[in-house]
Image 1 (spheres, rainbow, N blue to C red):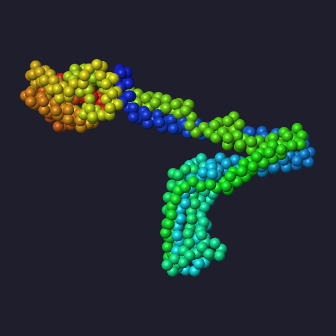
Image 2 (image 1 turned 45 degrees about the horizontal axis):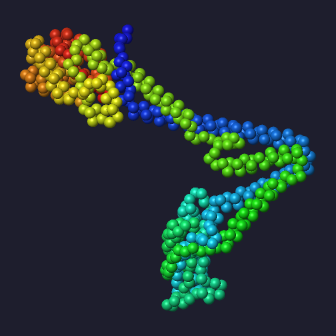
Image 3 (image 1 turned 135 degrees about the vertical axis):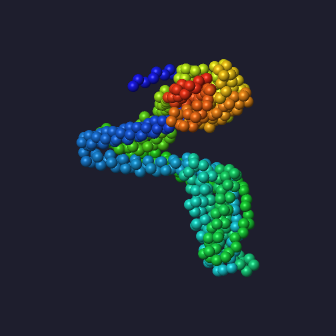
Length: 499
């Protein structure tokens, strides 16, 4: 069986594909993500392989150099390495403390300070009040509160010790001489001192502490019974603290001593011993370099690249290519009519007119309308009502010339509700011009009702929608009309939903 030869209008094909831009973009994004994931997986495998190769190379080098050393020389190198490793850890910890602790950023002579003071009163023995104060001092700063306080300073100062910034003290001493009797109740003052880098941070931390104070007081009341807590003072001021200078000096001195110890750890080693020593300390040195170049890819250790622009672009183009090919194949392989010229070729009959856009397209997306404007070929879209009026007059005039009174308008149910509405509008206008018109859901030879309609009809007009009306069904309808001696006057074409 020979396939019929069909001519493809490349301009119409391009229009059809461009109107599928939503699906094309989705396909592009899917393949871009897939390509990037493939790149990440491939990169991770390469990094793992590189690390394994480097580890094997280092291990082999260590084994080779150890054969050139005596046991005593090996022991000397390993002792030097342990000294280096121990001091490297001290160096790293103190350096991070100096850089990433909010306390180390404060000026010891001008410290933004917030002081919260609470009076605690309870009708009980002095020892019980002492226990309440001890609970506040030891447990008020729970893990959640410390996390909330650190978040005020930001990620840069994540190593901040909250207990260095917030000090909780009470007025009770070992002799209980600061416990006062107030209206028959023992009372004392709880002071909460807050350090921060500016007034705004002080106030934000103070709000966190006040909320925690309220919650924790309720918890303590369940343990110790009812007692009274009143806020008696809240003050912001600039203070000084010599301990901060001492802490800074201690940390700086520790960094200096550790660095000197690291530099002197290899003193007195021979050349072969130094080769072995350098292989041992190499991982520590690489870790130090990576910490100093965070976010920067170095040649020492390859890192996984989680966003690969090259692969993303390949995925985008591949997605576009596949989607375009898919819709081109659908367009070419489908057996429906694609344009008005094809309708003419299939029926060998004229086209009275073509409604360029259906009702859905008229309300369509701006991008769709913009794409449609590219393919208007300089013609303005005619108003649908005027167009149908013109077509009805042309059909009526032709029918009158052929002495036809009863016309059959055929529209297949598969063409959709809107196409049928256009057919009914056309039938109504033809009726107003004195024609007797019947709309039918396609011409099928085994349908008795259709055959009866053909028996009474003088002529027929086909209403076809692009990308929906099947070529074979149209040919069968033309052949049926010829057998029933019903002349087909021509076609009315409705634009596609797709373009």
